[in-house]
Length: 198
Image (tube, rainbow, N blue to C red; front, side, top):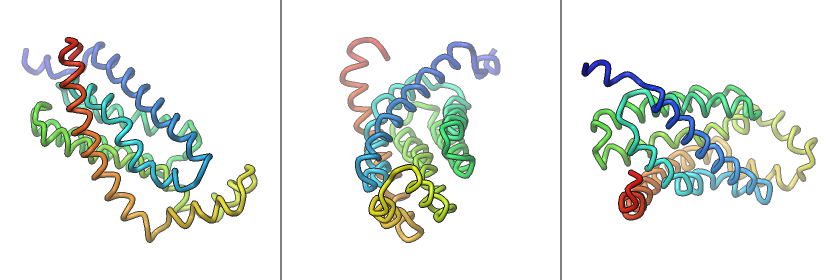
């Protein structure tokens, strides 16, 4: 019976689907802001973890079995590929989700500290957005300009995101992922638990 309880069921997959859709909607909405200024693209590592903290912490309250967080990351990798980001970032997205799943599981999906750490690691998926910029720089710049962006936009984008700054962006992604988790946990506890949603 215990082993059966650890298997993912239909309701678990529904939960995964709902929160993956919410996470993608947040990412897509914020992604549109990147058209305004390239520095906003670099700031995804700050903005997205904070914006997704509340819905993802609500998701974490629903997670009781290993695999749910990992599946979200796999779905994100597929969505990013279909959305034109290519396959370069897929391994990072999936590995981040898998490690995050293991961390949350080590705290039995109940530990506050493990949940915060898990979400901090999970957010490394955001950095997959930067893989095309780093790995295919020349063709990516050409595609930007051919797509209607100015040379100034391209120059500013590559000034903000390059091999020298990626380390800083990764650290910021983790730090603000943890901050987003703390804020999200507080909001979920204050509002959703009182409403009986959690």
